[in-house]
Image 1 (tube, rainbow over the protein chains, first blue to last red):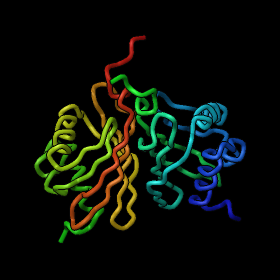
Image 2: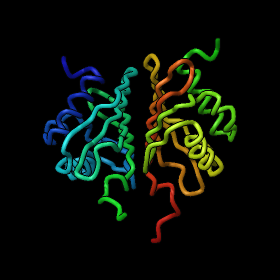
Image 3: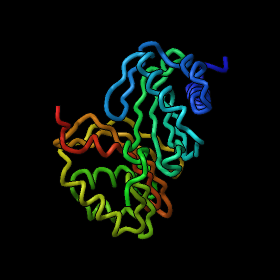
Length: 119
Length: 119
């Protein structure tokens, strides 16, 4: 199966949500996903979908930085480009279980994605 | 040499600065390091030393999350524990050149390390 490889799963997930296809992305996420996100933890797919689905429409592009794979664990570093910034990196550390994303640690600096600072 | 391996260099660097030994840490950093940090880019070892040296005294502990290695590239995910938080992750993506840390992408959510929010 194309789907049983952690790297492939994360790549499919990443491509889907960053192109606005939240349904396809969520097919690759476990129902009981645990995500540590800036500002708080998210438990379960519905909470996670709300978080990712809320951010995706703000994306104007993606800049790749690096990808790491170690067994069932995958790390991505990339630039989620928005109207506010194209050079603020984000990192995600995924753990895959039973062909789905079961855990995620998502790291970015919230102020860098906010409105431009007053001079 | 113990020093010629990217993983070893990053581990030595990480152990040094997180235990407050900034001098040893900076011996493993290239003079012309380029670091992308929250809020702005840092150029050169003196700027980088100022940034890391300013944060290190606030550390009360470190919680490991994950380490990835791919040739000259190393990624760390960990909890830099402070009085404000012990569960806010940080990620660092290091590129090693000529036995030193030449590039770093450092990601954390600044508000999570600030004073506790008013209820």
